[in-house]
Length: 212
Image (cartoon, rainbow, N blue to C red; front, top):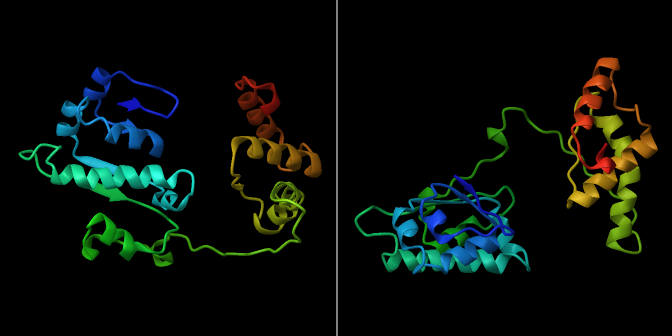
C-alpha cells in the first residue's frame, strides 16, 4: 500500500507494484493522464473509490476531479484496463450532493446502482439546531466572531459529553482551540485530575509547542 498525496511524487515502477493508492483529486487527474507510463498498473486496476464527490462543485478543485472521471469513462471504452480482466468498479460517495440522477447519467450508471441513505439509517437520530448571527465586515471577521459563540453552544447542547467542532483549515482549528481556552478557561472542559493527567501525557508527545 502507498500513501500518494499531492506533495509526494512516486516512481513509476513503485506505482505499478502498488495495491492501493490514496490521492487527492489533483493527483488522481495526473495519474489518469499517464496511461502509457502506467500500463501495468491500469491493467491490474479493478476498483476506484471517490469520496467527497461534491468536490465537483468546487470552482478550484472540481475541474480536476471532473476531467479525471471523464477520462476514466473514455479509458473504459478504449479497453485501457485490459479486456480480459473484467470491468473496473467505480464507487462514489457524498453526504451533501442532491443531483444524484444527473451524476448517474453523466457517469453512465444505472439508477438501480444509485443508493440513497437518509436519516432513517442513522443508529442514533440527530437533533439539529441552526443559529443565526449578525454578519461582519468580512468572511474572515465573521469566522473569527463565531469562536466567541462556541462555549455557549457547547455548554447548552453537549450535556457534558465529548464535542466535535469542525473548522475549514488546520490553522483555523488551532485558533478556535486557543479561543475556547481563552474564553472558557484552561480547565473548563477538564473533568478531574485523572483527565488532566491523560491530557498532559498526550500533550507531551506533541512536537509543536503551540499545540501544547
